[in-house]
Length: 511
Image (cartoon, rainbow, N blue to C red; front, top):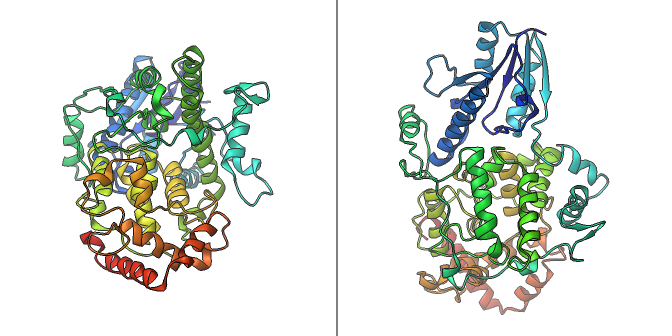
């Protein structure tokens, strides 16, 4: 075989991949910063910078190990700003005779590269990314013949397959899932540890992105960038999580607080989704930490975290490859309302949304309950178009890559898939938000009022949602109690609630 070109995408920063275990003569690697990737959605400025910084550090590490590599920066004059167009001229210029690539994790990129290689006049090969604990097709095969894809069943099998928190064929404590122990409100903020910071200066990257005219959203502190952008930093963050945060993680993983953006969450999702860390090494490290410190760390803390990685993360990826591209078009409730303007500014009088959105704009991060039960909950209750909701989540969060974003957003959060991912819509009134946070304590709106002056919008929109979607939801066995409660209300009460919801929806941009 003659000269070989190997493509590395921005979310394929796996230093442990078999490609790099030895130097191969006549092998050239290529990485590229392209407008194709910065522009397909409006990304958070921190997300763009984090990917470019991580890619550059990864490229440098490969070169330091002796690998030959071409790196196209966003402002390189040779850069066609399109992955396959850049590959075309590189293959010609470097007299390439064979092309290798790792399977992309986004459907659009997979389709683009497959179409391109089908016309290549040189040999080519697709490689696994050697990152995930399952193959693309494993989940669909696991549930073959089943109408529903129950995550818990898949999660238990993953535990068995990889011998995680297991005693032979049984869970190590006799119990599989500690979800009921993971739902506590934070009442003592003094428990919170200061987050680990990296304090990198990324002003040069920010200047390049802005000079190029890339449209971004959110804020960035250029001289104090805190996200891990190398495997070394990712491992430091993993160690910090295990030592400082894991003892309280499970207990408070659903909690929300106005003064603490990260609480006990690991902030490892970007390092994982860019493949700087592998899910198996993260899970094994957490399992080992629990095993070595059982006097200080309850099993519920470790199990709650491990379930997110080998349960939800692998499960959502499997759903993505089983259901795309049709999944991206699903709109079970036929919602068409535009996302409120304040999703892009955080300027709303609803305290929970002001904090969850403001934090997202400032940090490019919100944890799963903020995403699901605050921003996602409101968008679903208000009947927002899942296309717009997808674009917002995909753009604003540093860890959002479509395979994990769209399954969580269109599936779990918006129930636009009609029940593939979740068995019921995740909606709530103000009661749940108050139960899990301090958001309601200083809000203009009254969490206890369904209608009338300053009544919390979540309360009337909650009942309005169930009322207008009765035909599609009333036979769901997990929702029957809601409809029985609704029916017991007096007609005047129901009328007041629905009128309040209608008023709020008409004034949605002013809430």
